[in-house]
Image 1 (cartoon, rainbow, N blue to C red):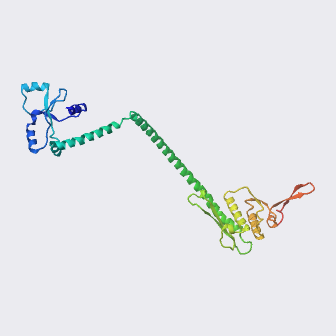
Image 2 (image 1 turned 90 degrees about the horizontal axis):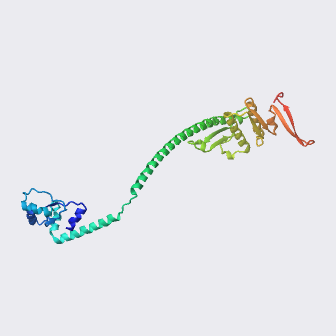
Image 3 (image 1 turned 180 degrees about the vertical axis):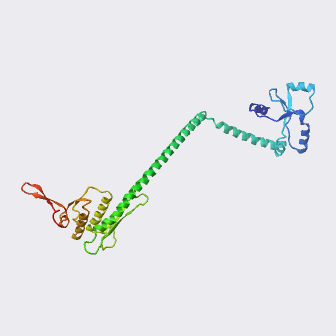
Length: 321
């Protein structure tokens, strides 16, 4: 009866049927040895009514007795056959009952240990709001990154294009200028060669640019192994090549011929004289092989009497070279 009360409290429906409907099944149970229903017991007044059956209508005396109490049995017909047979043996039934009660106790303790978190719902709602806000911020950040990357790619492409345009022009001019600058003054035309190369072709503006120059009648060697005069001629060729791409009003050269021998000084003088119609050269030099081809001389000397510097000028345009 305690089990019935507990099932009522926990709203567990039991398969009950009136005791009058047990006749046939009890005989079958006796034959097979399987338990198909419980012993009859009195159903309390507040218990749910047993399921109706197709038996004949009870007599008046039976109906009056059912108003006070009803004898019912628990129908075991829906249980698996092995369980019915085990229930027919008291030893097996007791062991099965013990295992079931132990399992129920464990489940009950586990359920009680899972104390409900009353703040879980509000925290979950807050987490959902934060997730939605974070997703919106993430999408906004992705759009910004995509836009920034697109703009960066455009700037990178434009930067590379402008760099390569200037580089190619300088590279084209440096060989021409070096050939002209190192051209022999004798009858046979002998000259050097020079070229530029990039260390990084993908992003050339982030890496270095190598400059290679080979003087006349010499094999190729690194720039570090050239003499001072040969490096000076190579540097002047690069300077004039850059000027050809991005012109300036004039050049100021301060004793660039100091490390040059007489032959290279003469070559430099010839180059400047040839290009003086398009470019003005202001040259500080102590070598007459260079300044004798100038249009105008400006001399600076020390005035011992006044302890100052004096300046002398001379126009050479009326004199032949």
